[in-house]
Every structure is written in structure tokens, then in C-alpha cells.
Length: 331
Image (cartoon, rainbow, N blue to C red; front, side, top):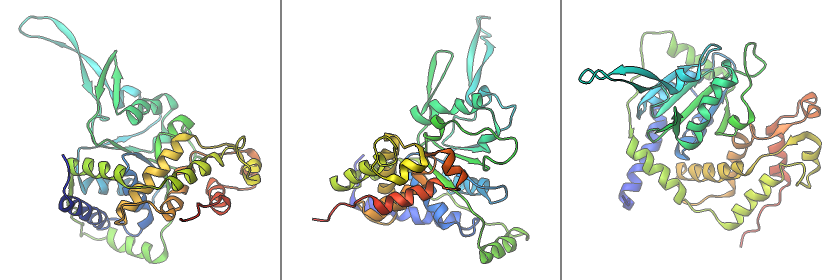
């Protein structure tokens, strides 16, 4: 259904309301919420990383309350099996004929928003159960394919890899996440407000402000946001410059073992479009690309041992590329 100008304005007006509802519970973390909303509008999945106790799970649960969508939480543990996520076949009997048959019993993955809590606490075999769902939005079991409801959004949390008892996510699965969002400690004032809010009896009432149909409409709008050919070419040059074998940037050759693939360029353009829409613009500017480059690339650039020894991070590599890659000249 085509949206009128009035419909578009009403829809875009709900996006700030969504953030306001989440902030009834979550103190600060403005850029975290912005990046999560960008991933949601772009139709991708989001990986939140931070040490325990920084409200990663609470952010996701609160966001689900502000969205009129089916929500399921999966606690990832070392003994979790793929069938615990996808579902399994159970033997049933037709009481009229007496015949027995297998029926697929859908798992918690069949919802709109999935909280994959502490995803790196489970072995790779179970982590891989999400791969098809994240990319194809469907699940195959016993030779049958079952489509997932749309919108479908996985918000996964993980503690840093250095924590004991974790299984690092494979690169192929990391690449399925549109953004890797890092959550840091709150400021002094934010921490004061957190302590005030969470140690009393008053609880915030979070209201659902947007429906599944409106979310799909917003995701469709994102793809209609304009980006110039010059900026698309800039993105292509930027992504290719992350690869040691195709770059002419010495910094990359020194520190990077493996660069970003084409999916990174797609993610950068889509998230830049979503950010522009959140800012009330219908065209991408350079600021959008530079703002989204760190969360898009931080899990797609693999550093070498020398970089790890020197405490070089992928964010530092991205910042260097932003500095040295030539920007298109405005007409």
C-alpha cells in the first residue's frame, strides 16, 4: 500500500516516541538506543557487547515492550541444543483414524523479536542454529521450510570474549549481525539516576507505540531514502580499503589480517539511510556514513596478532580510514 505524505509524517513521528518510551526505563545510553533503532529500521540484527550489569538485557526487554510485537527470550547456556531454539518434531496420533504422524512443534525462534541472551555462552553448534533464520528469515527442519513472521529481529547480547566460559562467535555468524554495539559504563550522573530509579518501588509504565505493519512500512521507507552515486562510490572505496590485498593504506597493511566483505558496504548504506530517516532527512549525507561506520565494521575487520599486541582496535582502524579516504567533491 502506497503511503501518503500525511501517513509518512505520522509514521516518522512515532519513531521519537519509541525512544521516549524506552528512556522511561533506560538511563542515558542515547547513542546505544539510536544505533539499535537504526538496525531495527534497516531490518537487520544487532549484537550488544558489554561486561555484566550494564543493562543489555533490560534495554532489549524494554524495547520489546514499546513495540507491539511477539517477543521471546532465549537464555543461551552451554547445554542448550539447536532444537531448543528452532523446535522439534513430536509424535502425535489422529484419534479418528488411529494413525500416528510427526508434527513440527515450533521453538521460541518463531517470534518477531528474539532476545538471544549471552549468545557466546553456548557452543558453536547451537549458535549456528540461528544462521539460516538471520539471513533467509526461515527455518528448515526435516526437509520442510518454515517461514518466520516479519518483522524479524534478533537482539543478541554477549559479554566480552575474555570472560571465562565463553565461545567466540564464528566470523560467518558475526557478519550476519548488521551492527555490533558496544555498551560502556554510565557517567557519574547517569549512575546516580540508575541507583535512584532501581532501588525504589516505582516502576515505569512502557506503552507500545508502533505496530508490526507500521514497522514494515518504516523499513520500506528506509530503502527509498536517496543516496548519491558519489557517496555509493565512496562506500565502495571505503570498504575495499579495509582489505590488506586491495588497499593502498599502509595502516591497514600493518594491522589488518582480513578486511570487510561486500555485506559491510550494504550494511553501511542501509544503516546510513535509516539514520537519515531518524534525523528527519530523506537523503544520506557524509555524516550518516561516518556515524555508522564503527558499529558496522568493528566485527567485520579482523586484526592481526601485531595489532592485538599493540592494543589496536577495529574502531581505531575505522577512524584512520575516515581520516585518509578521499571524500567526493561536491558539485
